[in-house]
Length: 116
Image 1: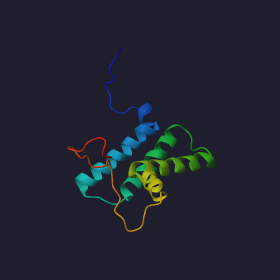
Image 2: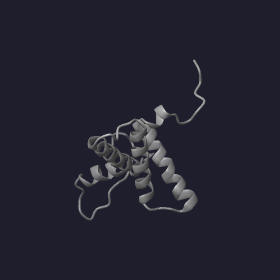
Image 3: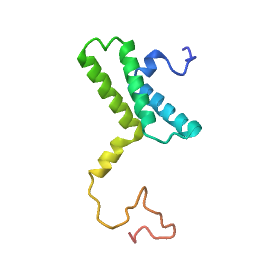
């Protein structure tokens, strides 16, 4: 079996995972190198990558292809910025005025397992 010699190929970046990784990398480089913390960086990157992939595949011949490329760019943006978790978290009711435990509950090391 031959080992891959490239990180990104036309086939890999055309997948959802590859396009999401490309937008994520652009966002991280923009934040680390250029101190661009705005959400416009991943938004513009999502639009560019989505429409370039659709244009390369010949999908922009009609209005439906443009609509799908636009929806794909929004999906990429939401996936990279974590908005899908934010929306799901916002839909979950929480008690008012109480702190919410994030992550795993703290472990009490010297407590009997029968005292729970």
